Image 1 (cartoon, rainbow over the protein chains, first blue to last red):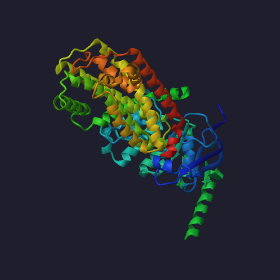
Image 2: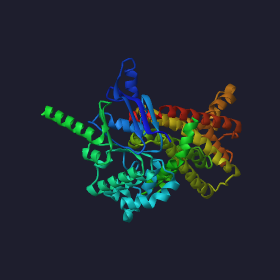
Image 3: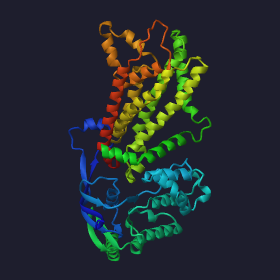
Length: 250
Length: 275
């Protein structure tokens, strides 16, 4: 077994922003000899090492690179430069209910969503009862998804995602949605993952969540790591910083 | 390429799920269901037949059968390419948030259109024995082979088009126009024998060979030859199917699929940033 669950070295992500109102063949021809893009640094030399079983909260203001980092770890984006080493199966909870279709029934959507998350049909069949029970939608499982309430759809999405059984779980502000009961359920599941020794990395704006589940916190500003340390102290420093900025603005 | 193919195979269940979703969703709330997709070609072929018979006054026996035999695979090609063209942008929520081999999106649409073609040929055979009362030939057993060639052709074009459309949204519209032109260039409403007749006599054989290098032409010819009686009437002499030329067209289709897949793979991990 490798020392680190996840190792990131000097990670940089550059986004090429194309100017012009429409990206089309016409603008391609007319802009042929003009420089028509600008490079924006989403992440700039980020390095971190995550031991097995650690829970890390990533915090920072909008546009600081939190989601970009999570998407690179979840292999949705390719880094421009730098190295990402992952030891284990990654499940990225960036979006609940990916691929859900309103006309399909709950059960059909479970199979589709789980397949998108990389599960084999056989694996899904074994877990389908657990998923339905966890989402508490037994009665509606054969009804089309469009008849579900927003809360039911969310519960179903979460129920499928946690069944992927990852070694490393990436969570993007999923905990911010849903009612209190649902949030409690999510926390329970996360604590269960922690007991099982899984690595969790989550993005959040909720400092209570940071204090509650994370042991370490990373504060990002403009694509750099501003502070990396014990969850409580980083959260405190971040809150102080946000208050300061807000008072300056007023 | 090999690692990508391996990963694609690991995700084969996702392709199955997407095909099932596509077929289920398409006809979920309609009473006639699958028959809607057949009604369209049937009405079009009936119209074409009536025009040829009564307006152009070409009395060719069972002409509708000859049109239909080539029209069904043409529809499959057209729908595969059109569906694939915006398959990535339609699923941008997925592409931007979940890791999976992106090629499953165009592939699943091509496959679901191929399944439609199989069903449509099922209806074609019923039509064949009831209305023109034509026999079903043993050579019809080659149908799966032709469909396999068509699968490669459809996949190849779908890879190029779906990838290009992410970068230039005009692709979809250009493809639409090109498909309209191609429809008249491909022997669907007319026969390849009609084309042969107008080729200049001194270079006829060579030009007709070149004509059949286009897999769309070769397939339209082949579908007719294996399914139907050699054509006769209206002063047209039937030209038998050239198997070697069909083989060449198959090779071209496979190459197209290969290069299309390579083209797609080189760019597929930028999609999430482009959408």
